[in-house]
Image 1: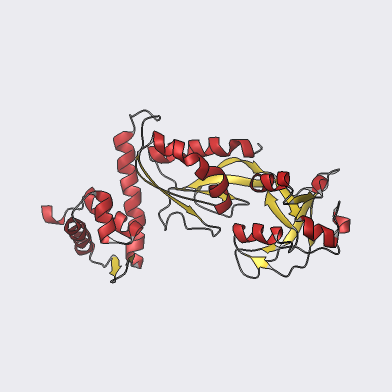
Image 2: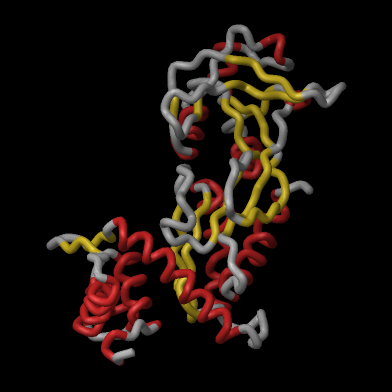
Length: 306
């Protein structure tokens, strides 16, 4: 094969960084390369594959459908290479490379980010991209190394690593309870309303509970005047007195202690929510992903039940 037509790891690294950063200039800075080298590497890939991989505009560079598909494969190939080149190094050694993860906003802001300085200090060669969104990201297509998901999982080809369960509480603001009364069991919910939480428009919300005597789950449909689609708005709405809400205890414990929120029907708590780490099937999971997931499990451990 002609040397000019060979595909090399550096070509893949150039494309991956351009797609992730949306810029040839930023990709060059991240790689420590001249910008011309990055451009040449991408042009080489496009010529070798016979397809355009990137849409280039004056403001941003975005992958074409072919580019997005090839990006996912390139990430896997580079991860395999990194895993093979570091497989005999001790797991507690310093990490290098780029790690892209996603988790719910409240979990990131209240539990994970406060502990990140110690993790990154131990691994100064690691570059971490931490996304926080309530939508279900496409882990493979969007190039995530792992994602933290709370709640029931759908069918998936991903590996699901269970971490435990988040206890959930039904809460309301003192002002709301002063107007509507404080329910102690589901039979007293008739005059109450629920702040609806839905990441998909039109998805119904119900107030869930568990019978303290039989352990049987149940639910009560409640009206509501507000539907939100992210955790921050959900918590803000219940604090504003717009209705009842059901939230993981780990995220509202301080608000309950301060009296900003009040737990109602504590004997009729909702079923706990399962917490999983998801990652792609790979023969050699990159060491940085292994170490980060182990650290994340330690960080979340005190807030979970088994």
